[in-house]
Amino acid sequence: MRAVKVEYTVKPEYVETNKANIKKVMDELRTLTDTGTLYSTYIKEDGVSFVHFSIHRDEENIIPTLTAFKEFSTQLKAEGLVGDAPHALKLEMVARSFDF
Image (tube, rainbow, N blue to C red; front, side, top):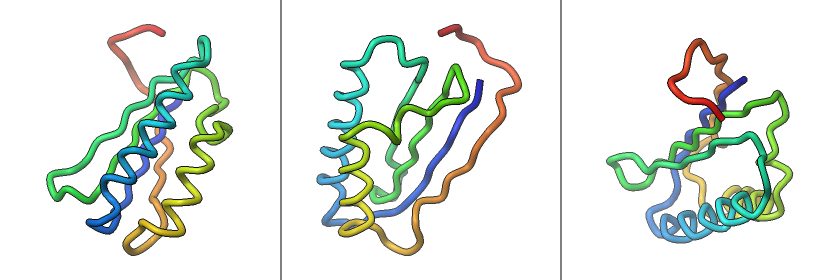
């Protein structure tokens, strides 16, 4: 089992677009059966910085293969980012309080 945390900041005028695109990714992920993935996204107190957190039962991360994610990522990089590209951090799980 592994986890990935991704952080980035968007332009203030892009926040609502980013939220809508994230919802599309989540909607597509929900249509799939037993992906072995827990995925959540948060916005920081500054109102423009996002944190995506995913946990994968297997080594394969299905999220980048989703059509909605490809569209989300392309538009984010073309229109929404402030500063550097999203920063991804791969994490090795030590312990958990849930099964999936």
